[in-house]
Length: 322
Image (cartoon, rainbow, N blue to C red; front, top):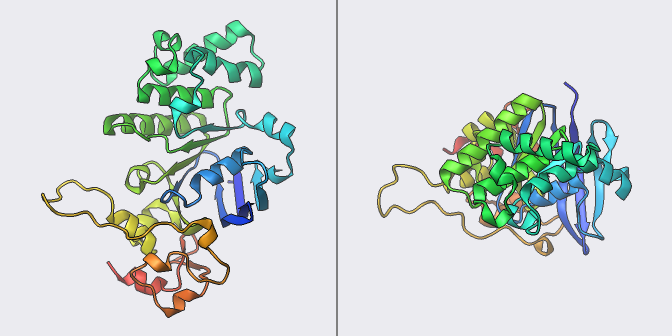
């Protein structure tokens, strides 16, 4: 199957700092892919690049293609024709993404008028059907964002993103600030829509345990790079990269005894200004396997087949720990 989205050696510089450092992945129609990592790893920046919404002055290099179209060659008019139509995004915080001055039904109808050129009455009717599809009734359409719960606002954001029938849906932390039951409902809704519409889904999260059940492939990001990439089952089972292992060890688990501490990953993701070319593995200061060899810049290494690879010079030691 030909790729819907192709990202190859994507680099982003802003203010003289390299924020994204050679990111590569692809996504086929109907496929689900998760970008995982701590805050500051470059996940949301990647999503903004795919939407043409990077801050002014950002410099992009590499290859970025959608359905065969070179996205890096688009001007603003070209992005406007693509954004919200063929590529749509569910933004991280629905309370700030939604307009507080307009009823949600009107906000869902807006992309229908702009992208599909529907008359006002037809757009409102279709908006009602979209809201019903995400589990909201006619009364919700007449409410303002502040009158809805967090889960309802997130469903409105999904309805807006789906309005123009996108080929690619990007969901940036779609379950932020939701309780466990609402998280499950939103993720189940997204999975059902992908299966129903055959969209490609790129899901972004810092919660590996939550997102791993929803995607076919994972890309683990750290300090603007992909450090672990492959089929979800392979990434979770092998835990080949020390950072992947640390993320999984830090997740809350049922059955942990009272007083037993969760495993914590010391330190934090380095700021872009702290990263220097030739300084070695960016995870080295936090890695339990760090050695002198890690002062070299690691290249991607295949792990038991070409579908799964990691960026670690001590891949063998990482695989045999566990």
